[in-house]
Length: 394
Image 1 (spheres, rainbow, N blue to C red):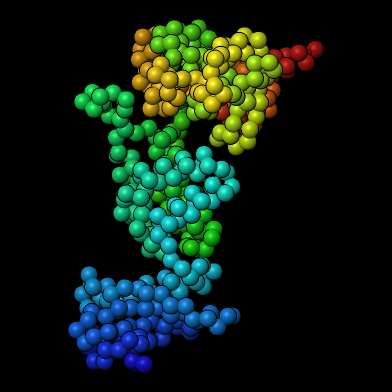
Image 2 (cartoon, rainbow, N blue to C red):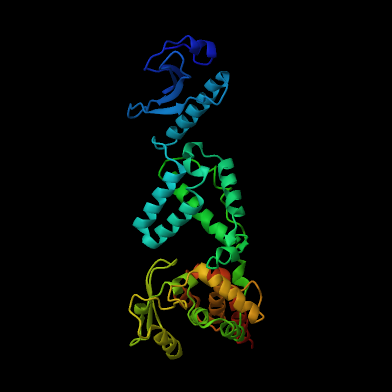
């Protein structure tokens, strides 16, 4: 064993061989240096001894050839000590990349929450993570600067405002803060899962850099009363008008409404079956006669697997297809530019809460938690509370 690997002169004197030369850094912690040929740069290895099991795992650290020869020992020592610290805190031995962490998370979602959630996360990773330099970074080497650079690029990526238009007519716009939050949340969840599984022992690299943008969901503040909703629907083409009417009379998420098939509506029972959406489980909604009649007309003569709400070309609605039509309808109806499809769901939920329906039932109808309804709509019950208190006056 070499007495020291710290100096270039000491390493130059080492004979080329397959077995590394080792230098003890601490109890059970060794740093190794291997020269396969006299002219080679040499590579660095870390070796750890587990006091309980007696096992001695090794980790290749690399050559550090981008550094000056005099700086390589210090860099290798720091890398080895980071690994020793990771193992000492209970971390796993095998190293994985950010991409592998994302792939593991997709598989975790597929096993615990189903294909829809897994496919959504997979698409976000394929679009925003895998093509970037961040994907190849090892988790043990992940730093805040890696995440900060990725987040800046994510926020700066424009979105095509009218993707279904001819390429020469397409316009771009800034990505919405709420969309950025959703993309970041998928990566944050993947890295947190990797931490829970012991691939890293700290979330310092991403905990603050992936924190959500505050007040990103301000679109919930856009409320349209019944007259304004009618104006919006009347100003829209028939196909998008039907979709907007559906959101106005049943408080579903736009994506959940778009996912409905004709077979989800039972005309005999006037029951609408909602498949798994963001809320997680299946649920069924008993519809009043007028609403049931509207859904019956939509489902008439359609195969069970056909979209209940279809575009004029027969295709299923998605967020890219409805963005431009609702903006154009809002302008025609003289409504604010901030009107989006989600505003119709928000308005329907608002009317249910103000109308006195208990929050548990509102949550069940809309496919969310009571806590979420209380957080965003609980303040609307203030007038009801005041009226109830007024009834106590003597």
